[in-house]
Image (cartoon, rainbow over all chains, first blue to last red; front, side, top):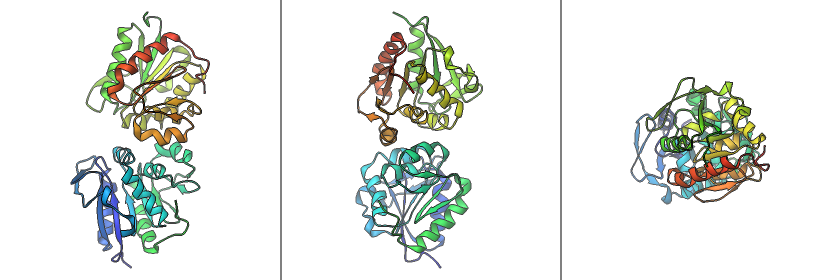
Length: 181
Length: 181
């Protein structure tokens, strides 16, 4: 079991929570997936604690049809910026429309609110988002990882081992009919 | 016209947008108001760009009955932390229940969402909050300052002159029956 035929996007911008980018990214590479870093920045993104990554593709050039799954790291500033970009939000929505696995941790579920894909879904997040998540129509639970038909969510960096395991499991399973916009 | 008989709370925690604390705070002092700095921190708060203020009273010890108005500076990390504190949220709600003026700028309207006081109100905010604000039942508009029956809101530091003027005007007017929880 590996992800060697899978093409995965990790989408973030400046201010991401370093471990929440690094650990899923490394795990996807260990599993032999093809990983593409997508951002609203043109060339480089820098984490809250200084980690940098080169951007592979700008959000304006991404067609979700070319990929199998989406991973969204947290960090408060990162999704707060990303959610104001129309293309970043469109990309999230396309993955849901195409029933493809999406994994979001910490503050990243703000992107799910912005893409208007949470009605009736069950998720977790950083606790500050709870009211926003519930107002968007979702059921919010306090667990290290929640899997709801291809949608994997976790609360914080301590949850990363469980988050990465479920992220890989859902990507291996492929499309989920109930994962929809 | 001055605010010399008015007792005002400015509530924030670490990560506040420095100018959004400094300018309203100085304006209130110029107008001779009695200003109390309230926080979830016990002793000192530090802005995003390094400004520090001594905390006068911890959130757990505040009774809104003792004050005439509330001012909430922005900065993404500040309200993201404050909204997870039960006392900070209770204080916001008490000001609305008591029909007292509340002024919130930038990311601070997350506190209004958390206090569940936005249904049917018209406000502005930093643009990333628009969807959260609308999901909380408010009408969101893109203006430098919006005044709705004692509730004054603005988008960002460029709006501070207009924000501070309306903040003072609403505090002078006193209680507004339509400002409610």
